[in-house]
Image: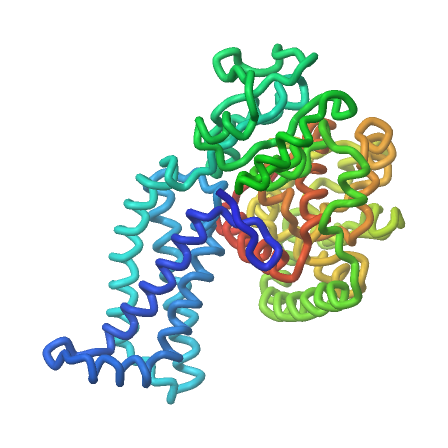
Length: 467
């Protein structure tokens, strides 16, 4: 089941997990500063009253670190060992941040023993909560029971959902075949006979939500049946809205312009534009200051490998906001003759054109750092669709519907598509990424941007998707 929190779809079990762990971190910090030999409720209340700001700080920083390492993500596929490594890194990062804060603010009241005890308590709580969560998250108690009204090609996208993360929020009960519609696109064993009222069928199977996936709504549309279901407390959802909510992308194969025109989202108000620009300026300035030494070392390494006359950067035309082109700046990671014939080529896995230094800086995403200058100049944002070359854009726009709509926002260094889909270098990959880009464009907000930035930390630290 997914719920909306500040305009964003959040998986209910993960929301519950986050709230529980945040409360646990708060509690263990208080207890770490409390003498159990003198326990009484008066002393406990006094401890909470005096230490709650520090406990909130510890809880907030720890939850943020866990989020940055992908531990509240529905797309997390790491096994037990991978989750343990991420938890260890997250707690280490939280301890470093809080230790730095206590050093800068020596009167903060955070002592080493308290921080150590709270971190140990957090580790024990995480081990227990994650074990329990892994057992319960896929149980039906957290899932909405869904009935699909339709059995043709429009219903096929639901029947074909294979990824575990896409099916975590609901339990598919079955499909109802409308009059005049074929059932060749859905499993035969999932077809449910319906001769009476749709509301009675929903009550019989304990349905929480009906998804309307008819092929032709102009004929035999069950408006009275759906109205009766709605008034009985059963949610009625349009197919594309359901797929958007559950998969985190906008499905191109069932998309129609009216859904984009009349649906929610696609905000471009002045407040949103202002918050986006402020985030770009603040984040760019901080990262530029922090990474300046690393950028200098990278420039020297490129010079040592390719010669002192070899260029450190390369500038390349990309398509940005409104279809206008600009020069994107990166550290050069390929040979200087990578496209000597002038022919644009996709980068591929194990690309022979990549230098030794280039392979390392691509793996660590260091080659992307000069794009901060593009963000400061206003050509790019920190978060948004990846900018593509004009040659590829012209080709893809002819073959992929709605492709040019991704240029209604500034391109970004990182984005929702980069988090959800691995590095792609084909027309199919461009189509898949576009679906995530459209989801971001529709649901973009300051909170969503911050969440993407935090989750990008996991991509960089774990070296995911680099080529």
